[in-house]
Image 1 (cartoon, rainbow, N blue to C red):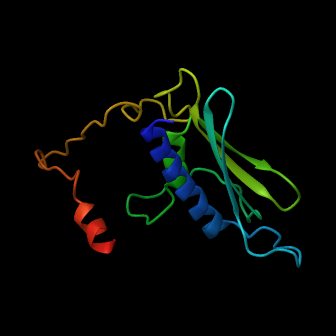
Image 2 (image 1 turned 180 degrees about the vertical axis):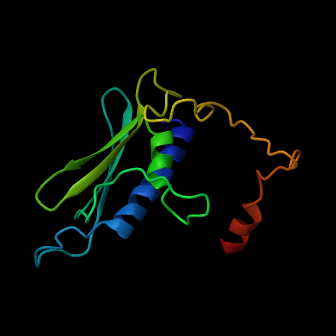
Length: 154
């Protein structure tokens, strides 16, 4: 797998685990055998396609992308996943288990063909990053803005 596919998979896994902790229940929550777990898995199929999935005990709602306000503190995770993934979905496994799966890379010949669920007109995610210029803020570069913060924390 290319570094960019691995980077996307790590971000997607982080979003899926966050959603499972925030919105889902632990596996086995209806029985005495549950131990508070969620399950994360990944696999590469015979064509080279990478799938990441997280299974939890379900929640009161089904996972669907939200439309958060500009100032909302959350609600963008599934939209990020939609932009990075070739496809994703939800399946009900065993009773009391819900799995969100994401096809990060479809294998042969699909590198860079991301986001089948991408909103119409959205471009630039699959290739090199493109700068968005905000009027009045031309020339500002935030590419390293968080480097110092992460260096201090680690």
